[in-house]
Length: 392
Image 1 (cartoon, rainbow, N blue to C red):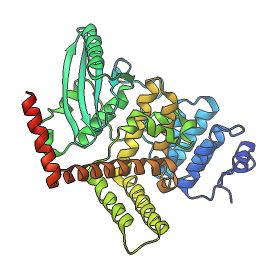
Image 2: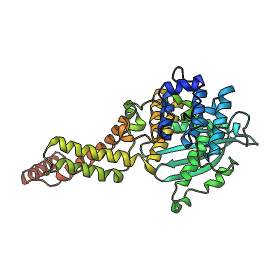
Image 3: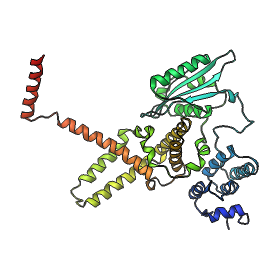
């Protein structure tokens, strides 16, 4: 028996378009994302279908739909979320509450974000007006690898805030973009949780600093707004063109993580047991597939997804909407648990990362080799040094 009321024309069109209610939850959600926004596919039918899929991914998609919904669609989304809660599926915390539910002077707070640099570092500002005039600004330096590196609160006039923003942009050659303070708050709190206990004493009392601006408890979950803002685009395939963007071009997974795979690839290519070049390439491809699967799932996969989400968010606010769509599509693939070895973008991403480390290792080996000179090379080097001395 279908989980959809097939007598409803909208539901019937969803099935006719290729949605199969019998699919596993992850596959069913992926298919719905693919169909959402296509001609003839009603959002109310999407909401009804999601309400019958007992999976956190369905709740996340419904919460994203609720943000911009009204009338019949909003009622259908809420019914679907209620049904999921009856099955023990909690609703994720959205980036922003629905209109009319703003508390703690939420509308007064603002935030600014820098881009993420090659090492995974960035700056987060959260700003709140002061009763006596001016603002209080929380400044946080965040590292993907080290967590929260530093944080401080500073009282500024609005003119000083503007001047400091301009000075930072000029000095660092980056653009700060305006952001929802809830997103910035989650990023800072997430970094705090990822900070090793041994280092927390060196970055100040973050929770006390935060309490000066924000009364609510630190968030532990975020329904990232890029999925609502770029819902249709996120359902598509991520473009390989994204790899040419600075945020991806300069992204470096730590060498220590990549080196075991690079060394295994080198051994496969140099094997004297497997003489057939085709077989050697198959062994290399198998290593790359395994690296892609291992580096883009679990905790490491979640870290990559979070970085892609924030890259998409920054790009969208920096006027690079096309690139933001590609990044959102890539993060959606990781969120939905798609087999990353079958996604060309992720294959190319990992190949690029491995290739960069392999090239650096080769260059290092060549440089070390040049330290051992033949007698003739040593004589020429000595003659060159003597010639330079005579010219002086």
